[in-house]
Structures are given as C-alpha cells and as structure tokens.
Length: 288
Image (cartoon, rainbow, N blue to C red; front, side, top):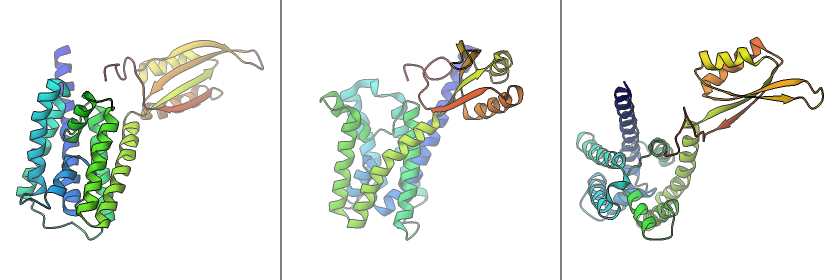
C-alpha cells in the first residue's frame, strides 16, 4: 500500500511538472518569441541570437538547453535534479514541435503590452509551480548554480545577473519598446512568481478562544481530518477559565470551520491569519 501511494504521488508530481512545462511553452512560443521579449533565461538569449544566425529561436533554445544539461552534469554532477532534466528536455521538445506544427510569422495581435502581460503571467505561474515542487526549467538556472558553486554569490543573485545581462543585450539589439518591455517583464516576473508561490501554499491559521472546546476539536479531527493544539488560558478582565485551540487549515476547510463555530459556539473569539510557510507533519517537510 505504501509503495502504491508513493508511485501515485510520483505520477501526480510528473503530471504537475508536465502541466507547468506546457504553460511555459505556450508563454514562450506564442508571446515571447514573436515579440522578441527577452526576460532573461535561455528563451531570452535565443530571441537575441535568432536575429544574427539563420536558426529559429525554438531551435536555438533546444540546442542551448541540451548543451547546458551537459555542462550541468559536468560541473554539478547528478545533483541538480532529475525533475529539472525532465522539464528541460520536455520544454525543448515541445518548443521544436510547436514550431513544426504551428509556424508563426509574427505576433498574434498588434498589442505588445497585452502580449507581454500574457508572457509574464504564463511564465511566472509555470516557474512558481516548478519551484514549489523542487524543480526548475533548467537553462540559465544551471548557469546560476555553477556561478554559485564557484563564487560567493547566492543563486538568486547569480540568476539575476544572468537575466539582467540578457535584458541589456535585448535593449541593444532590438528597438527601445522591445527593450523596455523586456525590462518590465523581468521585474514583473519576479513579483508574480513570489505571489503565485505564496498563494499555492496559503493556509489559514486559527486561534480559537472558547468555553466548550470538545465539539470544535471533534469537528476538526473527524470532519476536517486535521489536528489541533489546546492549552488553558485565563481572561485578563474576568479571570474566567478559557481554552485556546490552535489549528491550521486549507482555505476551504477554514470556511467550513468558521461556519461550524458560529453555529455551535457563537461567543467564541477567533483570529484567522494567513501563512504560506507551514512546516511539519501533514504539510511540508524540512527537506523541501
């Protein structure tokens, strides 16, 4: 049974990886390549190089991704992740397949700002999903890991350095509108990624002060299949004995618990806070 659960969890993880990669490919092929947007990364480098060599951005992206995988194995060993290898290969194959099946001669619309928004959102959501399950899209992430290994820079700073260099190059190669859109895209992408990751992991932390904790705890344990922590407290003004219940739930469970408490003990005092970093049994492990 344990083996079956492990296999199902692995399958589910790779389905999510595939979905995130498809989002990345759609954003890159439909919106970044036709508009010459260069938010950094291998796709951004490919957009710039395609202006100088007789190869498409998709082909250049495939070549560079495969080359960077080899470089990653040489300098980093196998430690940079099977998931990253899977995403990198799938991304490269899907971009090449898209070029063969759906050739594009130019942007979908004549609204570059609108297309930039879609390029940012699709890539940011994809990256957030990948980062959340311990993977990445490869490419310049591998360069950043190598820089981190052989210098004092952390991976975030190293990745920013690589991406900024690509954006600066796009400003020199293309017109001012494309360069400025690329610069805005780089800044916006980071903000969207942070917000998406936070929302993916968002949970509600309940602190409930009540007189009758048993019905509430039974509901949390039996109906919501969660646990809670209890401790005794005393009111500062009345000195009445109270019980404090602390529990952490998903957003859907939070709505259910709030309604239940309002029906069974409307005098209970409740505070609800948001948290996107919950580490422990039933949530995240320390190794993630």
